[in-house]
Image 1 (tube, rainbow, N blue to C red):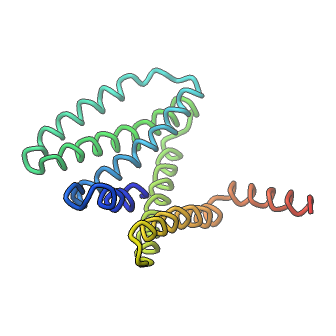
Image 2: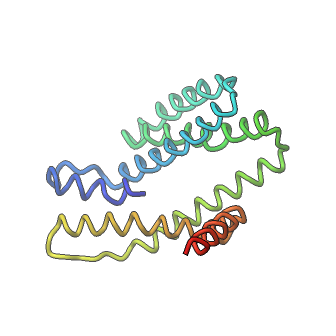
Image 3: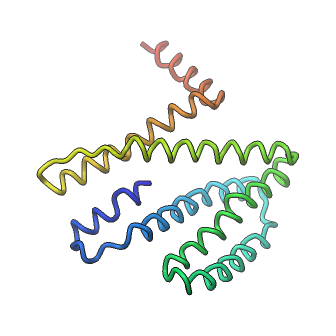
Length: 189
């Protein structure tokens, strides 16, 4: 999200408006960045649990990426290549890799896996939509760099606070953790 909000403005301030990429391409690169960051958590969990037998998933990801990118590049140009990468990443990283981890490492049944995937995508959707509507307001000041700095700060703090609110409402483990932390803090005082 921060990449989407700040990259075009930063490049425009730094190098001029003629260097800035199209908003569609910046949005696609932002989605790809999100998926790449999500990939790290799945890879760390996979390595931590000692499962390295998913070599077919990266191969499937590469095949999907090449096919979709080659088809879409003729119609959409560079955007088509990025969409191909996003499609392959979402299929493999956001769907198949969690299924692999839940089934093999955690020995979960299909109903639990589907429930967790729906729950995760629900949180992601609420989070992204909320951030979009909350951060639409802009603070305009006379200095472009100061305006950029304020925009980056607001766009950084808002998602953090929103995540805390969403997870404290919907996730009992987060509520328990917050309760323990508050209890510990007030005991010290």
